[in-house]
Image 1 (cartoon, each protein chain N blue to C red):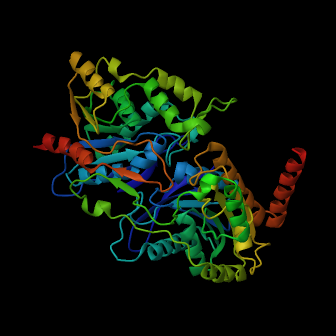
Image 2: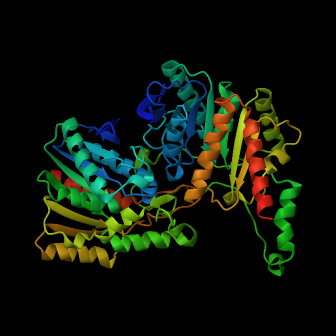
Length: 305
Length: 258
């Protein structure tokens, strides 16, 4: 059974989180896991995903901290004018400093969904203590195969030729408000408009992480099908990089962006826990684990004809 | 703001105590009772704002997660109405001890309003009970949840009987408990005032008011048109902040002080 306690940290701004640790007597050790807010959802995560994951990880002997960025959940609002991308990285590093000082942690895996995935990449670039990223619906780039999968079924349908579909990935107001007297600083939410970096820049940044041997588990939902539509597309978008030994890529096409389906939630938790266990808690290389899963899928596919 | 775990070591609950700010401290503390499921996610921000506004008017405020919800112990499948009513009681006791309070008021949203009502029934230390867009009838609420779940998630798992509703499990046991819930049948309350504050006109809310008034309960009903679509989910994790209604609730506590 895991143990949980409230932690408070932060130099300028008081940040609040919950640390899930292995049962007393179990040695946790490195790496520790940081769970990152998605949008303005507080630290429990979409559909309480962070709570479930943190407790499963603690049972596996891995400590996990879920906390709120400034202005989100129970953490204070920042008084400086840092952009969200900067404050998020600064606060993730403060979380690492806190766990280093209080628990002796030296390395970290950062896990997040959507904007949380973006911030996981940002902090990995900035801090060499990050040794792994578990990213859900991170940025994705269309490949030739993506277009084939995307357009082939449509070319057969006459209706696909009518109308013009304009798609943008852009932020939307995250808070539905009624008109009324403003609530002053209570409305001071961090603002973040999600835009994927240009592919070349993403590749360069990913290359720097590969050179540091940062491990990556990328899970995609069908909720991002405008940008991603087959398992392996992430690796295909970066063929210039040697990701094979470092990437576990999964696609759950029926899942929506925040994985509301209970079975999909279990799949995501199992995948992340399995990846962490295989990569950092086993003598077996992570890719043996990934390879075993691929072999299982192939066997299942054969069994179904 | 002081956040901590309280209750038994086997089933710790997460709570946040907001001490008052400002010159004056009121003797009446306010316990906030969240709704459940996706409604909890969507309203968390609104509760933080309500807490901030109340503490600036001199109130101690306490908010907490029920067992199996938020940061409290327990899996999401483990929650039950009976447990949650006990959790409201534990929260009131913890809060009174922490803040040295004699009396409290309760503000509950959706199912939280029903839980607060049930918890207040046997108490004599509840000043005001504020029911914000309350769940009045358990069967109607379950029907609403099933409709929100849609076809794919709304089918019960054959083994467990659990239905997925917008990312949260609705177990068979909880559905059976909800089937017995009807606030209109409340005979008496320990609360000195019952304030039904709603975001739109719905027959169930006016019927609740009428039923309580007919029994001589000290109930009032106010509609403050504002956002009330709590059980929604989208890709952006949107929060709902019905400012006018939040301020309407705060005003109930200002009137008390005047």
